[in-house]
Image 1 (cartoon, helix red, strand yellow):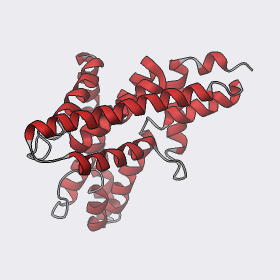
Image 2 (tube, helix red, strand yellow):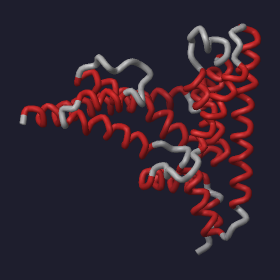
Image 3 (cartoon, one colour):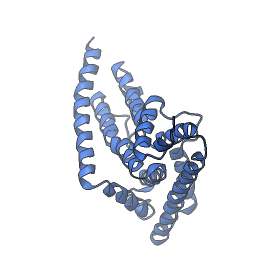
Image 4 (cartoon, one colour):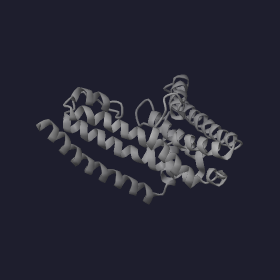
Amino acid sequence: MNYAPVVDSFAALAVSGFLLDLAIGDPRWFPHPVVMMGKAISWGEKLLWSGEPRRDFLAGMALTLAVVGPSAAIAWAAVLLVSLLPSAVAFMAVTFLASTAIATRGLLVAAARIEEPLRAGDIVQARQQLSHIVGRETHNLNQDKVLRAGLESLAESTCDGIVAPLFYLFLGGIPLAMTYKAASTLDSMIGYRTERYFYFGKFAARLDDVFAEAQSPSRRQSCVARSRQSFKSQCRLSRGRIGGRLRH
């Protein structure tokens, strides 16, 4: 079979990458691109942050470009090298690369790690697992608040971890998807309106806004609406399951 047309199809790439991520997730032996981006951002922040507004804005912009540019270039070079392989091997390689931009399996695993201790009545373990995916204190949350915070966080992550990467895979293949992931990772790490990051992360936050708006307001609003509706439905379902388990 000639896989060349499939390899060159962004639509086939997005679908195959989504299915592979759903099946195997992120193998521990492979250096995940987003993890590498995160390490680069952390290193750059330690090196460049000063506490002086003007300098921090310029430093944050430089860091953003230094992460986004190489991410796109490395992804483009990887696809170019893979295209030199036999078509069947190239198809498997680009599918794997595409799957690293999607987080479907990871979100499902994160949800299960919170739900399982809740169903077993282990609220301490559930709080600990929740702390890995939310940016707030969890030690004083009760069962209902742990469940709500977990499902709400996962519902919101659906747009950034699944819908948006698939959109950019469809639109421009792996290089554009990795460019988006770099911008999204920067925003999640330094794009805050806090005293430390207000100037340092301003450029990164604006760049992430551009990617969000590029999906079109209607598409973004639809994604958020579906996520909220999914959250409400899953919350009701999970409460029933957990409540039934505890009563027995």
